[in-house]
Every structure is written in structure tokens, then in C-alpha cells.
Image 1: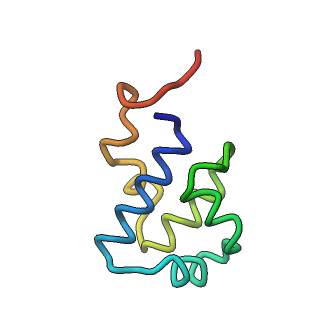
Image 2: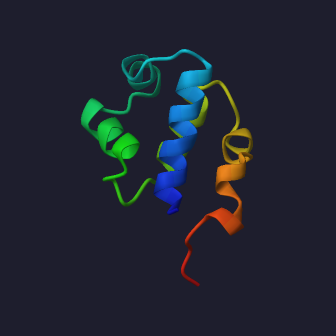
Image 3: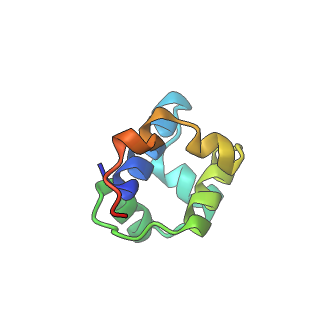
Length: 81
């Protein structure tokens, strides 16, 4: 799984858990609909740290809380060294 896939997975899980729509998350974060679609579908290949901060703030959590999920464990990610 790529980091971008992990971000999409985390966002979708949080949206489900908090019963939040994509539209509502877009409104809170200021992330455009097209950009959010690309993030959630996995077609975006470069999710920036700034975008991750916006997503975390949209879920009313710190960036540390956002990244503290199992999906971001190095053993789960395909990272080139």
C-alpha cells in the first residue's frame, strides 16, 4: 500500500466512523471537490503534508492522531529507500 492509499483509507474510515459526508469534509477543510475525489479514489499520487494537516483539522484531531493509525505502520507501506 502506498502512503497515498493509506491516507485515503484513513480518511474513508474516519468519515464512516464519524458519519461525515465527503461534502462536509470538503467544506470544513477547504479542499476542493476534485482534489478530494482524487485523494479518496487513490488517483492522487502526491498527498502533501499540508493536505494531511487540513484533513486532520477537519476531523478535529492533531496530525499525530491522524497518523497514529495502523495503516501508517512502515510494515504496511510500500516505501522506496
